[in-house]
Image (cartoon, rainbow, N blue to C red; front, side, top):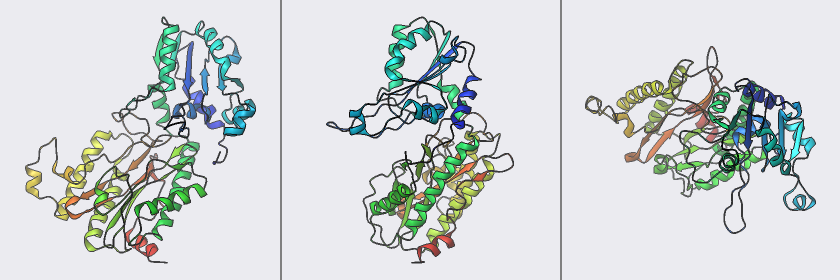
Length: 430
């Protein structure tokens, strides 16, 4: 484990919050994610199911969490089933959780090996009235690969077809959308590591550098600070590549006079950060680049003032569109006639700003949340406006992460350089 031990109080509190939302006599079962295959006998590293991590802190395959608050046997009210290790597994894969280490990590006292689960399940199913099972219900999810949870749902419903099955996902989304102080601390740690990486590459970027060399500098800095690695596949696009929203090749050479857009951030203890910065390859903004950059920066700051408790994200996005429209008029990228003649379903500003401005962030980069419900205190969002000018072969996006506070938002990336003068000073300080 690269990160420092997380206080199990976090997971104990999360389980208690879930228990308070369950109807009487409810059984909850969650499964860890699979270790996915690549080719031949290869496999990927485990990316743990966010919900089971949220409730247990266990980052290990073949883990099952069972919560049955009203179980007649108090030892069955909270149970964790983990993969039993062996000398062979230890030799090939290293240490796995012991029962004691699983208890210390999760705060769950009743830990069993996974092979005891099926027999226990039969006993619990005869006692439970409601059975809550987990699925990925993120609005943008695509279930092309069947998960361990989905296989478990299919098999459980086959064996026990007459039970009352319920969706756990809506409850988990309501819980996870509000971040506790401990969670915010973990997100802030990811942001701090991201800052170290950005400051490092500001002194590295120069004409002739490859985009993938910048990527290498960043991952070196992240890992040396105990990060889990990249929070998402890094986007490092110079010149026209900055206008490709999900540019992932990172293989071109950074040329003198270009801008380079870097949408790249670290993950720490399974919690994510999400940063975007756009800087001049040669360390000096041209007048045009600076004008566009400062338009985006003004928009980001105005968005922070708007993204407050009570705001609906759909309404927020419409207001952001008006801000960007005003900036584009000032930059001469659209005309008033373009605005007057625009289709309400395809406003003129979308030629240069075509994506959403904010999303929840936490255990997932695009974290769970209901975009139709009002913003609330305790949420954490990205704010990431951009202007992409394909005809001029450059784009600019800026992005920070914000905690929605009672009186004002807290910028979790406030110390990461964003002003033109500071960026130029650091880039030319070698």
